[in-house]
Length: 363
Image (tube, rainbow, N blue to C red; front, top):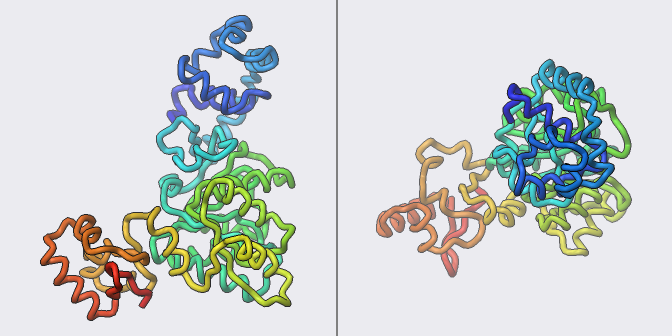
């Protein structure tokens, strides 16, 4: 968004106009310049299809308040992305009630990177925290961005695990991106800002509000290829994220636990309902590799030589069964050269030959 041309003020006005929703704006944008709405009369707005309340509220925009938020955005180095911008994630556009604006601090390119959300209890066990951090660490080594909500417990462990591997992570906040919440995560928030991205649909300066956190969960799942739940009770905010994920046709993964651990209840319930039970990172990569076509590197393979990391044949094989024809097509190598390289990789225990092709090994 060109924030110097006046467009930012217009988007903030739309955002703050009560009763004017994203569906109305999308419909109007098909036949009219949205910026031109501010120069129309009440009657002309009604003729375009706005209700009397919408037209009145838009005409009575508090431009002094808009200027206040523009200054906050500039002062805090916040990037604002509207749903009409090319930088807005395509998957997020498809969810119900997609946010009109995203307020971002950090690396905005991560919004369109392949992501896995990791969520769970704020009161997780030490084992749960360790599992969340380990999965996050391993996933980042495979080129996945970790998305979570910066809450205490599992969320914080997921962000820390991603950062430990110098990986990328996105924190979707229930406050403004200029607010530290919870306060004990101030250092972690700054670390995410340096190495990842803070994103929120709420205006700068928005303080923590209990109603905001369930809303932000639809963004966490909407940005991601799938959601991993580590530890959570049946009645928890994590299940809201999972519900959104199911509505959005995203993958749901669950780490099992002891039947005597109350925080294993949600995972066990989800597994019974069809969520995939996961024991290691390859269980997740198996499911999302079709959606993420650039070729996974297992954590161990990521430390291999540069020759292996640039091998087109290896990068063409996922954790699903990949036929020789698909490998040739993806690698764009002659078939004899592909077959020779497949033999080398098989002898090196990086792939395994199966009935219908080859699979990548987590070795």
